[in-house]
Image 1 (cartoon, rainbow, N blue to C red):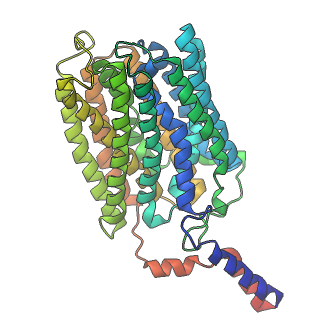
Image 2 (spheres, helix red, strand yellow; image 1 turned 30 degrees about the horizontal axis):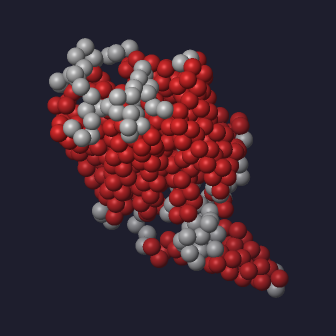
Image 3 (cartoon, one colour; image 1 turned 135 degrees about the vertical axis):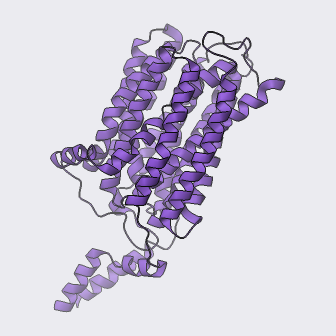
Length: 470
């Protein structure tokens, strides 16, 4: 009798907890919150990097810092999923976010003292923190949403996250608007970035662990006990022989490789300081549009999940070919040895063409990365596995970025940089198609069947069986 009451009480709690999609423990709210955390931290970092040279006239210090950053990011990106499975989201995110504040502070110091040692050390620490943050973010973004709406939730996250780049782009544009001849941004710019990043660190404590997040159909995202160091070490090592992860390697390597070229050799070379800030507003704004567009295709274009994957990859491949072709036409007139004679201002008549190209680069970046995250999310549903997959993706991505920033530091010809970027993204498309073909399965169950199976968690089933036996 008492057991039967317990069943009713738990069922009523489950029903109450799924009344609104705007519940604090809903995937929608939790994915939005992780989006806001990334808005404040990596979003602002992207705006800072997007100015070229971190807002400095000489990009050497930030290039070296970025190499240190992405070297440690490579290691902790791969380890980050295991660390998240041991520590949970609060400690993992808070530790990661705090390193962004330190990095922005190091650039403030460099703006006054011109000593790059602190910037490089801060960059290395940021790589550790970013590895933790992005592994946690990847687990949340790919495991919290319902399986048939992962593309929509990825585009929601990507839009909120890249709003950070939009707002972050406005900071240097507004604070340096009347300094159109200035070479480096002022101190207030870096202080503004530090304030946002500090807010993101505090906001990270609002994220719930996966076993407390309840979807609208009554299912919990995952019911896990935090893992052990030995188990996570074993599982992380297995990723290097996992054929699914090996097929993702070219896409992961390519996905941040182009940033050094686009930021330092398009935005910083072609445009003056205030216009670089304005360009970033539209670069990251384009990412919001791109993520929404590809998210719709990956969730709603066809009933078959595999077909949606094939169509999404094809759309990104065609658009990417067109945009990199436009980049080639833009690159041919200038080089390291023959830079443009004058920096473009947004008021110049010749501003439109290079601006549209830079906008398109942002659009393609979001569509490419959202597509890869969707594929990763389609490979599994549980938080532990997806945190490791996401961490592996970010680790390989960061290894590519570390190489790319040194490629730029050593003044590799700009045309060669463009061709390598174009080739890397092109190689990844057929491999992703193969991965979807072999590893992504269609869910042929109707929505009613899924809801019926999901509404009674395993714990409820156990209680019911106890009630029957008594």
